[in-house]
Length: 328
Ligand code: PBG
Image (spheres, rainbow, N blue to C red):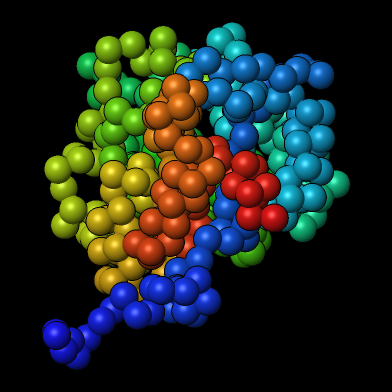
């Protein structure tokens, strides 16, 4: 007869004790749904590499939002699909007060003032070359010149009524520049969600299909500004700088392969953290599910719970709608 002092399995025998000691929970209020916006009316376009996700025209966005609110989702992140003729070297469409995203923000906020709208601040949708900033003759992305455009872009979003501007460009000093401009222009309640630890990842390809920028980007990459996947200490430094410059929330991206970064940042800083379960992560799960290799509901809930366990407060995920239904 064995006499064991400790039997951790005792607590796992019944579902009621398992639930009593459950440390983390995935809630619908943790979810943020990214949405791609196209021009025109009555349009819903499929995206090949992202089954179940559609590009929506602004009128369809309103219908979508009604559904999201019904499901209990309280936040969306908007990304524009910019027609080729609106793309340029100077990316000036990015701060057009009457641009696609500015109109989308205005239209949604007029009707649904209680929904949190998050908008992307970066130039990749607006440049002919698909880089997140302005380039010099060698194709190098210029930092300070880009920041001037990002500031104008962020102000145009604030003007249209966005709740949260989300610089995803990884230029140095842009959080400080945007914060200062928001303050100066009276937008003291506009939040900044800083993509502080954004990696030069190969998990973004379906997203680049969705916003139609992959052809523009061609064989080039974003390694001179997005972070090296090999680094983790560098993320701590980036986050410290962004907090110092006035960020309200920190984003880590991609998600699942980078949960160690989420964890480290949570341990090191006392600030809300969002993590982005990106397009490639979504595509992988969908592909496996379509082949009946994984059970969708179970594997997705487990995946997103892992984000919470690592320390994420909010999760951007293309699965938000499905998850909200499962959690109902
Ligand atoms: C643009 C941006 C990207 C994503 C969000 N904002 C792509 C990129 O940096 O090339 C990727 C999101 C996803 O893959 O779901 N700056």
